[in-house]
Length: 319
Image 1 (cartoon, rainbow, N blue to C red):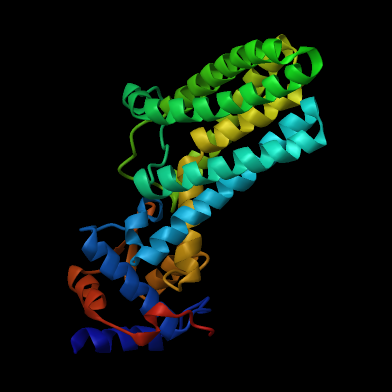
Image 2: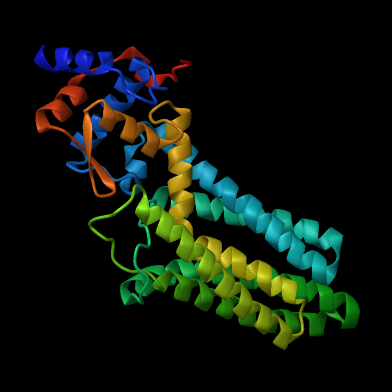
């Protein structure tokens, strides 16, 4: 076949930085071409990869479980530290386990299965659509955090001044914490803009999303630290809570993208440094660069790779 001869000829050329074997290169280009055909894409942007590119139910379940574990550890450690600062190490451990597991299950279900679309934040502006779409999720987050703070307050004040007063203080704490957290979470998710159709560098959307997430996390941490000082709880509690809200409120796309890339890499579909490999494919004259994206040099070559099959496609090459 003409394209088979072309592919072999390109591999026989002397190319700098040829650290990838022919088998690896073919397997990764075959997989990429098949996904591009499946998604009706002409230009491939790294940041536009979606969980729908995972091929089996097991891989999609692993994606949801991994997101849940990230939420479990981040929320568990964060809540454990906050309660330890106010109520002691023992209660902090209990709170960390309780809130960690509940957050892990919630994140796995919501971010991994229900709302698993990856939408990078490439421009930062206010979006009422994002606010409306985040209302239910924000209320759920507020209820969980409010319940957590309410129960902690009931236990704390109940042991000190009596259970009746503890219930009253717990209800007040639950309302304040739940409302403030829900509003903060929704506001953070409302600060998003439209996706830029063209990019200048590979993975630009995720890089910008990460930058915005860091900035908004610091803003949330500062705001909640001030709020903590006003209500008389340790300032570090507000800092930790703000960082967690920023992480999941604004950094959702970056977390999802990193999780997806890790699963694809572990299954042998992509290399660790994807941009480096795609640039190598450009040297082989299989791809060409369009801004921050990549395109096969000809539609027929894309279709040829998509029709190719290899038994090694589903196992990692050790070469």
